[in-house]
Image (cartoon, rainbow, N blue to C red; front, top):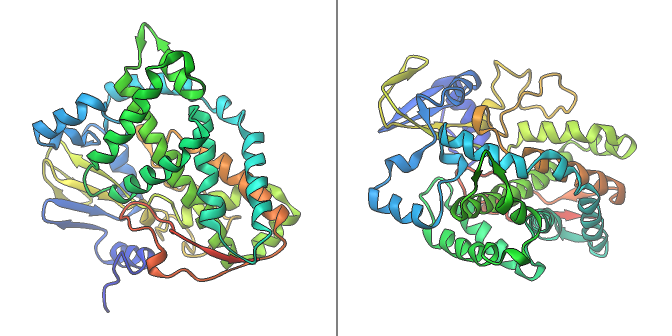
Length: 378
């Protein structure tokens, strides 16, 4: 049997690895494919750290820290807890829910414009522009700056897992510094982040910029991929599309099953603070641990018929948004956007087909799963 590769088709590769090498050492890295093993690693931040800047060359780490504070994604407690509490205070689900009507209006406008064409790139016309417009409005970004977000987010998404794109991060940082240093003109979430305070502690400019950069990727690229992946998946399972048209209450379950079945984020990483083991495989101090969330979401020991798309399955405990202290802070917004878009899509679009994407159409990333373009026929 030839071993499938990640670039050919990740889900076949995951299946091969779960069955043959569920925990696999390669050099100074350890690759983990089973649900419970990944759950245990994500639950133990004391041993498996997210604080990768500790491993960087001191000069590079110093250069980054000077302008951009470490993201909450790569911090451990207590610093992570302190920073996340401040951000949660400003970025609360109630605030997000206030945007539902605006998200629906944006979705309607984009979908109605699509109806004038027979062949539509759903990425260019719907799943990319909507999250950018939403996150821009939430942050309080001027409309005419949105094209910059596309350039920056594409660069950052491509660099994930391949080392920091310092040039792009600096460009974005300079942009946000230009905004937050004019407090009288601030609005939206940026204004809230600049004013939030708990027990006398406020966010620094560097921390605000760091979170804004995180939202640019997490609030844009991942939601784009979730919408695109959902439309592709329901095109392959059309009975659920027709059911959704008659019963919109099914839509949240369709989104949750897509998150399991085609997760926008396929993997995450930690490093070992000390010598340890994962299911009998030795892990040495400073080893990089690769956790394949997309594989966990199709683990045969957890899900019955894991390769079957079934929104009505009872077990919905996927790992698309991670687990533990680093559970995705933007999950409520991503879910809301995807549900609203799918409701409006199934309302305006009576039927459609999808042109099967090629491997070249996939996003060039070892972490993100999605498509640069997806053509639908109306």
